[in-house]
Length: 158
Image (cartoon, rainbow, N blue to C red; front, side, top):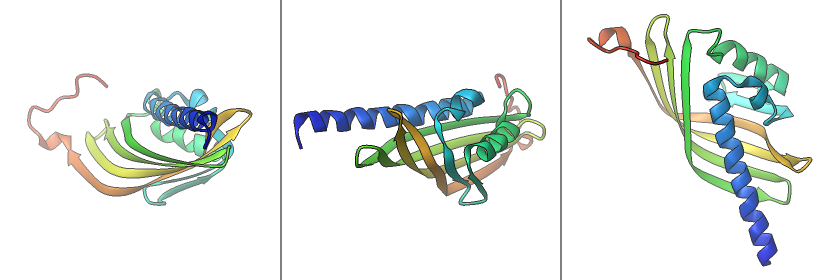
């Protein structure tokens, strides 16, 4: 591998890391137009071990806008991803595995869910930009909490 090849490889890995972190930020803040631009038109998505599956960007974005939009729902969601394992396949395809923590709160009934999982993604470069072509996660642990049952627990921001 030449120095130029090694440098390009590192640049691609950093671009994919930025892409995934931007995806998470957009999910957390309900930035749907920005998120949509991070996905290939033919994206395949599978969340919660296949409980929710989507083919195509329009289908996925309709679900996300309806289920997680902070402006129109009583749902608070936060995602955190870390420890990426990214493997490049040729010049324009890659795969990644990310450890993920997800916090979800339905403010109507104060039911909280926490999840620990691993995302598995496929990335494709189109027109010089990396985008997510396939995404999904498998849960390792999921727990719930009825926040009404914890005396003195209050939500101050969110």
